[in-house]
Image 1 (cartoon, helix red, strand yellow):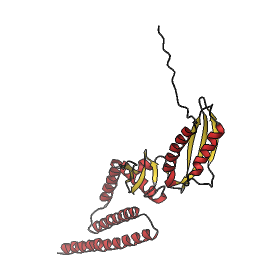
Image 2 (cartoon, rainbow, N blue to C red):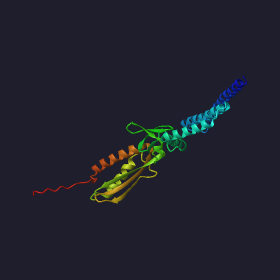
Image 3 (cartoon, one colour):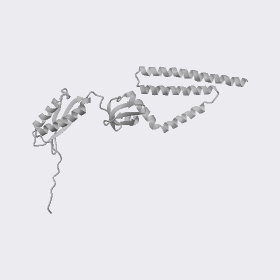
Image 4 (spheres, rainbow, N blue to C red):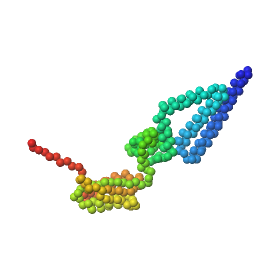
Length: 260
């Protein structure tokens, strides 16, 4: 009877440790959640950190309860360590994605809605998760890329700045009127209301190439106007050059035939 009573008391104490410990863990979980939200930590990262902390606390509480029952928890700790190592090796790529996801969320090289080039993909950021980042391409495809793949290479964020420079190179023939061509290019970019006058557009001869005299044209625009200005300017230059009989050289091949 004494032995039964002793085990009964140990079971009650173990249950008390587990129940009270779980309540304390829930309180700590709530406090941690509130603290991270006050720091304006990303919601995905907040949930991840809170759940990991809560899981670790439950493991510690469970081991403490088992220890109260007289069970040697050393072997359990060793098993957990070995299991953790095995899981880490088996899911090394997943864990690297988690680490990369934490870095992306903390350092914020880009945010949802940004137009970026990363991991060999160009698109608009749709979602940022712990494991992966989802991009939408220009032709409306969703690309799901592992965070480690994104963070391991260069990240180009085209939306990071409010303005972008549009660069062009236009070639004319050596027999064409250079001053007329230059003034035509200046007039075209200045006529576009989307092109900034400060900094002013830049037009200059950049190269005397083998078959053409090349002009470099640089204009500053709002980031959202970049592609529209680029496409419109290319079309306008071609049409205007045609009107003014300014040639745009292109590769040609002379074919010689022989009667022999």
